[in-house]
Image (cartoon, rainbow, N blue to C red; front, side):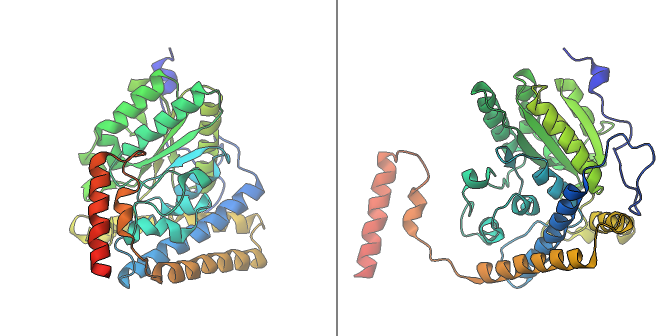
Length: 361
């Protein structure tokens, strides 16, 4: 049994870059390689463009809703890049940029948020579970998958993403407890963006940090500056490696901020002021990463152009794909309820087919 002191997260969130993009003296972890940092920056650029384009599609009435992760792209990128090809990502509704970074077609990702289907992509193709709208339910699914993989002798790791609000749900605690008891290879990645819709963190938890919640379950925990891309990568790399090595579940709390409203249906000005938001503008993960890469002479003009063009191509594909109207098939109502349809479902499906046939004739 681990000593409680050994499970405690660092007193301050891990940082590798300050807010101007300069390396922090005496950093606790080594920097990721230059190639990984460039890949991370390219993903940041695409993630920001995905967020902005999705917001525009909502305003045009082409998407029903969109929960933006603008300002949290370092967390999105880190979650995707820290995983091996055979690992699984369990995202929330706000993690569209992470799902795209994992290689899923953004048009397929937005099928859910357009209201056309429960999930528009095949979870097995990229090992990305459907985005979860109910808080914390995906954490239990991640633990189940990771536990099963361990029983089969596989080295699969599950990255279970959630927000600060989800840590107040019973499923969060059940997932941590089960994972700890059975040493399931799960990384619980909490993006603490300071608000659960309109409820500030101070009204959600009295713990010193959300990472401290892991101690009570025997789960190793760490805190990281969620707007510091190299630090997020380094901390998640270490957590994934520990889970894969059989050291049990890991809990990482990323300190970040939700720059925009909860969704397009939310009016954030009713519960927070511009004075509170403004300081976070200077902590933008994209600008911080860009400043570091420029100082290191890694971000050439040609590379910036390449990354920007790649992001614009993604945005253009989003506009075209989301604008296409889907042809609804009413029979799909019954297709994925049970692996073997019940007699009641078969009866209902036959009744609907008959009604549609009568309308057609």
